[in-house]
Length: 458
Image (cartoon, rainbow, N blue to C red; front, side, top):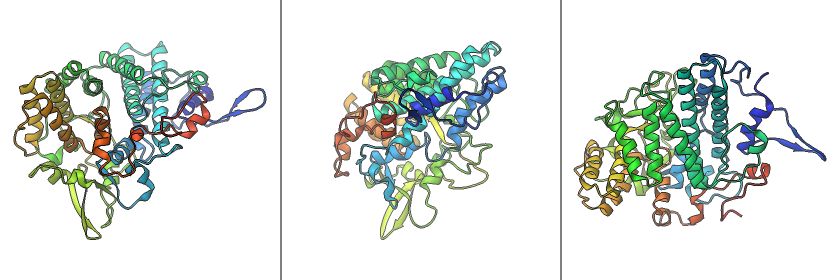
């Protein structure tokens, strides 16, 4: 039979979008069409071609999405922190001002991410149950699906805190799950990534570093351990990728985000899609003399003198007599022959992760060396920070300058270091500390009586 309504519908339930009608005696599912790329369930995992297409569907849903997908993590997180905001579009002001209200402001994250988690769960179960797929194919596909499940839970838990932990395709049970503690979600993330790393090899199963390999898993696992303050594990995972010899920092900053960049560990391919350019280029580069998304002055004015990241990764525009800067890491706004793909993981972050881990382990010379690699690439001299505390402070700023508008890094960093109020209240008059977590969407709570909102929103 085809992918059943009950199994597919669970994706929508978990995302808070399920349509369950109640009558006086029983529950009934509304008829919902199957996904566009649905295949006969009995055949979906019968051979490597169809099974692979199921997993690649996760990738394609990210590549072809524009507004309601994982790339929202870039612009919304940037607005919530002190990276950038829409200058001439007031519809995003709740994120810019940190004045989100109870309701559905954050549904764009919740629903899209749970849908992708659901696809990953479906793939994991189907591949594992297949009696015809080879072991190597099973390992590759399950490893990729577990990576994607971990990726989306990482963002959910950092946006919302406690979240329902959906790890199977049991629609009715998942539709009534309560929020799992952050620690439990992180445990699942680590388990998924550890499993994925054991299943995958360092060889990319695609051209252009466009599918997950073992190094991509290690890079992301380094970030996860880093957030958990597991310094030794974060250092170890980062070192595994750095020392592999496969990747290197790109000398010319203008080439960091090109398709063939040696710094890229994992990127989303746009080949064969209808997407003309990256979401970052399309969103951030103005279409006219009127700016769209601009950097906060606190960021634009904080770069050190001669920092080539400001020279090459930002661009000035004058509007109503004032000079603003907008992100210019991606140079192409619209083209039919793109030269850039969205970069999901890159080497510079791993040097900064390892440097901060080393600093917290009191490995001062090693931390300085890793930090200086990133600074020198930006045209800056070696750091003068010589103690653990000074290095940690410097590294927070260095991440701001190196990783601005990359997947909410600044937003998450301020929160993990308990510095959000200190950094944001001076530039956001309406700031309240509870806004560090987004509200649970009303649609999700209406569908699941066991979901409760974050404090401050009720």
